[in-house]
Structure formats: C-alpha cells, structure tokens
Image 1 (cartoon, rainbow, N blue to C red):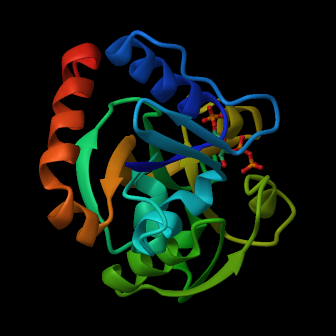
Image 2: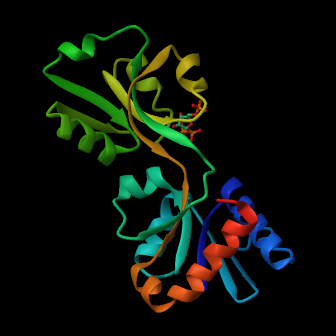
Length: 203
Ligand code: PRP
C-alpha cells in the first residue's frame, strides 16, 4: 500500500503510529523521499501536495489537514480523523474595527482563496480576493485588504499583530484520506490498517 505523508511533524507522528503497530523503526533516511517497510511505501511530500497524490491515484492513502482538502476541494474519501493539528480557518481583521460591515465590497487577503471566496459568496457579500502565500496577517495592517481569511492555531499571531477573529469559517484537524478507486480495490486492507491505527492511537 502506498501512503503520502506531509513533511515534518505530522509525518513523524504518523510514522510513530506505524512503529507502534509493527514494532519496527519507521523513519525516512536523511533526504530520502521514499521509505519501504512492512509492505508499505511511504512518500514524503509537501503538505499542499498530499491530496493531489491521493486524488490522482499515485498513492492509495494520505494524511492531510481538513483545511487543505477543503481549499483544494479534493475528490477523495475521508476515512479517519486523527484529531491532531487542530486549528480553525477564520475571517480576521483589525481588533475593534468593524467598519468592514458597512462596505459594499470587501477586499480579503488569503492563502485559502477558494475557502474565502466560497464563504463570502454563500453569504451574498461581494468580495475581491487577494491571494497571498504567507504572513497573511500583514495585509490589513498595511491596507492591502479589509480582512484576511487564515488558519488560526493558538491565536498568537493574530494577537501579536493587533488582529482578532471576526467569524469562524471551519474547524480543521488532520485526516486520513483515500483514493476512491483504491478504497474499492483495497477496501479490506485499508480498513484493517485504519482499525490498527485506531487501536494504538485511540483516534
Ligand atoms: C500559520 C497561519 C498563521 C499562523 C497561525 O502560518 O497562516 O499565520 O500559522 O498560528 P497561531 O494561531 O498559533 O499563531 P505559518 O506558520 O504556516 O506561516 P505562513 O505565514 O508562512 O503561512
């Protein structure tokens, strides 16, 4: 079975779970992107690419945040919530400033452009989205946007930059996702693995 893991903390945590299940060491060697062990092949990919590998069938399953699946609108099955990497996607703006409510069209900066657009469209609010790649919190501070849509984990970044949540769009956590064909063809194998993960992890 082929599994895509997002580089970093989540990959380490998932490999730890496998270590407990199989009582063997699961670890990517220095710069290697592929790890083969106990009938599994793990691929070390960027967080934003996990769902792409799964959706296109390059791997059977992947581990990724719900925020990413939502933004990409990935056509995959979500099969388990690991309950780690909890965060929310919020509309945020300058603390105490609610003048955005009187505007006929809002300018919103975000890395999550599709989530942001979808949210305001649904509310019937005219919006222009400015796509940024990071440090989103800067946008309203320099007058680039009225608001931002961004990931809030501890809330420290908002607080330290004089911003606050205005509205929460969605709550996210790390999910195990499966390719739709793989889930049909390897259903028992996948479900068996999920059961083992639940046993050791209590997810
Ligand atoms: C994310 C997110 C916020 C911050 C939230 O950014 O975009 O900026 O973390 O975390 P907090 O609520 O715990 O402060 P990231 O660290 O991924 O960097 P980025 O600005 O490059 O997106």
